Amino acid sequence: MFGLGKKKVTLNPPCSGKVVGIDAVPDPIFADRMLGDGFAVEPDADQATIEFCAPTAGKLHKVFHTGHAFTLISTDGLELLVHIGLETVELKGKGFDVLAKDGDEVQAGTPIVRVAADEVRAAGYNLITPIVCTKPSQVDSVSVDASARAITDCACTVKLA
Picture 1: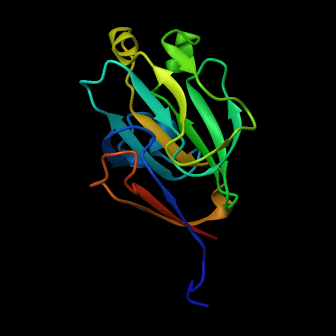
Picture 2: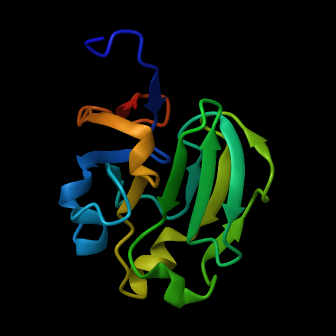
Picture 3: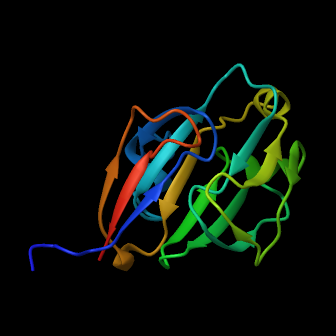
């Protein structure tokens, strides 16, 4: 009753940078929440190489061979997509080094993909990284903390349905 006792999942940024609401992503697929609600991180522009990490503890469901995205099921069962940059699948893995594999158990902050950020940016790609709850039926509400910047900060709290 009144949402008391509902479980909450905290999500950290997968890399350091500016945390924004999902609606700030310059791609309507994400901004209009077609894939689900969440948040995004604009990685620090001065980083030549960026390690993208698990935003919470759980099990990697799918790490795309191109390195541009991975899915994770949190220890609470929340299904997440971390999509590194926009349209970066077109790079076919160039500039991406996959560090983990499907089925790996991870903790918040475990590195999953290393990206040659300078190379990806030079190719004209935006590295804004959406983190999306892919099963809307699991989510009651999403609260984003735009003051979060480090991978150890809580960037988003998801109240489970």
